[in-house]
Image (cartoon, rainbow, N blue to C red; front, side, top):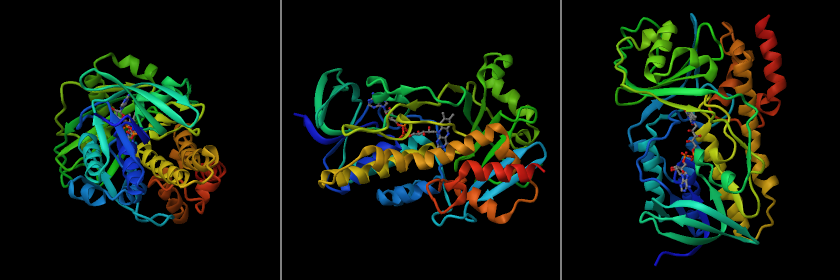
Length: 413
Ligand code: FAD
């Protein structure tokens, strides 16, 4: 005797799904979340940005996240050959939170989903969305439940928060190739045994460390420390570049750490697992982000690149925006989903796009590794690295391409 109709169906209970569900429920909108897994489940995307803390707070989940004991994060550090530079997120142009956490996503996503449930949201675990029919003013979803039984659920509106599952882009033929070239990531969790007092190079556990391969500047590593003595370690490179290292992923990862002597010094005593995971071709785009029947949240829409840890922040911003627009819609406002949702969301996504493209073209690396940065410009770039990519008062948001090009040219002189 499950309900067969609701106002809003949300596909996926990751960060975007749980946050959207809580925000809608707080506005007395009837919502059901369908999640194909049981929680906790692994997910990649472990370094948060301060800008997402405001959304977590609005969803009334901040106390639970703070109490969970995740690794404190106050900035981002970058290393290229003998150059090391750090951004302190409290010293930034845009007002707002300057600290956040680095999280094991299995635990983090469960904290958010449990909070949504505790607020009264219905989450149906092990319910997989298989098909959708969009009709005039409503949609009908076909779902397989944990007992492998199929049923139909009718909703006024569908939010696709299925992440890399990309449920609606697949079912509705919305997939569009990304302009970014395909890249591959190899990653694992190591027991790090980092002792900052004995480390031969500068290291700060409160920051994500992004290291650049000394010979190939488009190849980079992440080191994301957790609060339990482990780190997430990953490398991102073009697949054809990695092919020459063979096909044993953990051996490739270890070899590439040896090649970056700064990272090798930080991880000198690390214990590695026997295998590493890989993910390839994750950049993706869509032809349409929203209509009067559905909206795509987070990764179910466009995914750029992991280099600035922007994925969860974009996912949560999209949830916040969509929940606000839906609340107005159910209150009787006339909504244009392109104008009211897609365009405001893309402002921040396009800002990140400028910096992702600038990272790989080398322009942004020239700016980041410049030995004498202008403090005001550093604060503006720092705000974007902290996730404040929607702040049009920041000239590096409003005119991101032009500003970055000008500063990169000055730094190159
Ligand atoms: P997800 O967290 O992926 O949740 C989607 C949920 O939908 C899942 O639980 C899934 O089980 C469920 N689902 C899927 N299909 C169905 C279905 N048919 N029916 C029902 N449920 C379904 N982001 C960061 O912020 N920081 C980082 O450091 C970072 N590093 C990254 C590194 C790499 C290599 C990559 C590829 C990405 C990284 N990201 C990072 C991005 C991050 O992984 C995503 O942006 C983020 O997880 C998106 O959250 P979401 O809520 O949209 O979806």
